[in-house]
Image: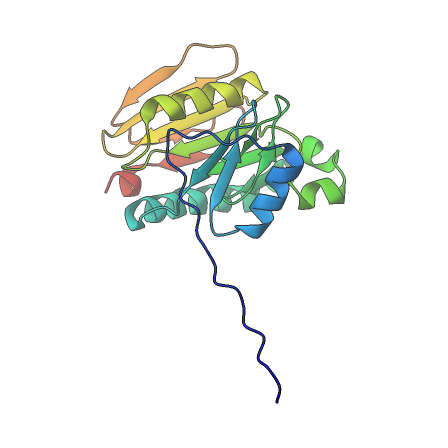
Amino acid sequence: MVQAHLQPKQLLLQLPTKLALQVTPEQFAVLAAANRDLRLERTATGELIVNPPTGGETGKRNAKISTQLGVWGDANELLGEYFDSSTGFYLPNGANRSPDASWVRRERWDAITLEQREGFVPLCPDFVMELRSKTDSLTVLQTKMLEYMDNGAQLGWLIDPKNKRVEIYRSGQAVEVLENPDTLSGEGVLPGFTLILKRIWA
């Protein structure tokens, strides 16, 4: 009689928000590969951050932003590459981050190897965007935006749909706050790109 090989029951680990788990870059890579349905991040000090899947409204807004960036990116592919929220970057300070949308200049992308491109990209994007969801802490997102700028980003947008508010981060400059803007300009970093916010606010 052939005995069936029973698969062990999968157990899910719930991480209390007050509990900080420290992982090395190597351990983080293994965790991320085994949990592709979760958006995992790692701080510069090694703290593991587990981001659950977004809700429908946030996912819809993020898709509309990514679509607009993608249309511009495809028309200007000689300038660089754009990325969605599932892309992980290994920042110079040691943190692993996954912005909701991002873009890297062509010369910087072409300067890294194929192997580096297939893993956590070892650089900070030139442009980053974070979309605040209902459960996101504004302070945490602001800290993340400043981290991007400290690690080499040239332009960043923190978009808060609930309050129809945008914080614009520029390298070496003070943060600019816009209340209910109709559009955002990619300025010199994303030349010719304009994000239309009407559908994002809806």
